[in-house]
Image (cartoon, rainbow, N blue to C red):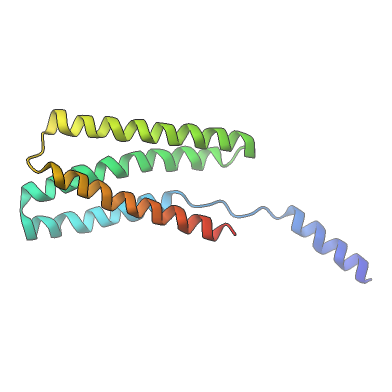
Length: 139
């Protein structure tokens, strides 16, 4: 009887798949902070500062959203395919970040470029924190 119970538990454990990481959570947190933070910066420092920081934040959030969608879709495939797609998504995220910065500085020409980088840096730190959280949760 004890052996049957152990076998049944082992069978159930092998059928159980681990939960998929929620990559989109970090992106949603970033968007929420942007929606809350931009009006606060506008109220405290004016339109020029708020728009410059928002440009930088968007240079971080948009590539993160691209990465999150690509990895979420890839996680439904085999581990090898998911790893390849994740690596490709990370490369795409890097290129998209560079393109976003190029567009911001070539087209929008922010008056306070330091705040663009500050906005990017703050939201990049949020991404790193989200990645650390995902690693801790996967243990």
